[in-house]
Image (cartoon, one colour):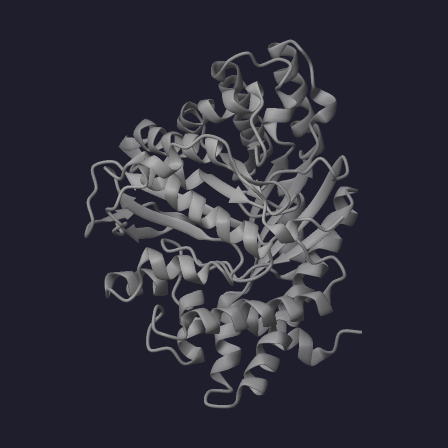
Length: 454
């Protein structure tokens, strides 16, 4: 039974503390669309998505109106397209045709993003995987709503360094293909290690092959709510601080649980998971960096930042799993630079660098996210950054990711404006020492010893 005080408290979180349901994401399996003829395959995909997701946006808007909970995005994730298109696609151009079909279907049903233009290559690449990866620059340049992801490693398999090397080049080419839009194509492309099958957040969302035909996954976000809560216990001990974060995360997750169950019922689609990720926005007061500063740091990047983030992430997860039996996806704290005003301020003040962000990724939800670098950054350096993040994920049995944007024509000290939720980003310096010989080695980095548990 929900008490009157809980209703009032939730309304306050929505109205004054930026609490929202960041996304309702419908996962749709496309395995039954497979066909050897590319035109038939595209027709099958279009019909499948437009039939299954025709009421997704309308239902999300109705729930938001009925319950007074802002639902910012309605999205779709699909089966990794490298698997779906393997029989029909003989070249990268064939995969681009599928991307354009997906974009057309996403526009028809009204969602803002569709994820799953993906390949899973943690142990090696098939011909279809390679063709999809090579198609990514053109696919993202030709579409507005498509998000691409490539999983290059896992704790069980190690890291496919051939894929890592290729992704450095693909990211550079994607930047060039969308140079007239400040290389924004790279903002819709993420390279992962240990990618989860049920992540509702873009750009890494895809519908895993272990999932049902359709599923509803909901992502909830509330950095502003957490910051407001811990302001009330300023100066108190860690036990009080941790309990406050945990109880706040519980309340946020319950809102997501309500929305997810209602969306599941109205759409007739099974409920999958709640992803409780503190995903910031450029809005004032909606910042993970400001939470860390409220905990006691003068500025993000100061000594103690990684410890504070580890504690925050752990308490968020503990509160979330008490509120829902099906917490999944990533669930923790995101630390994107361009989407978090506090992070941007820390970079501009010289207090936060890529190396410190990399250390923070050891204990947060994802990894190096929405990092803008100079357009002349070598592809091998980008591959080296990807390899470092994949190694952190592999060894620590967690998801890590890299969403890096080499902005064509921009240099360190300048900034780039992406707009909307993507925000703006300072161009960050990267280490000038070369790793060309390292990333040019062929093959795989083996899985760590603790991966062998059978």
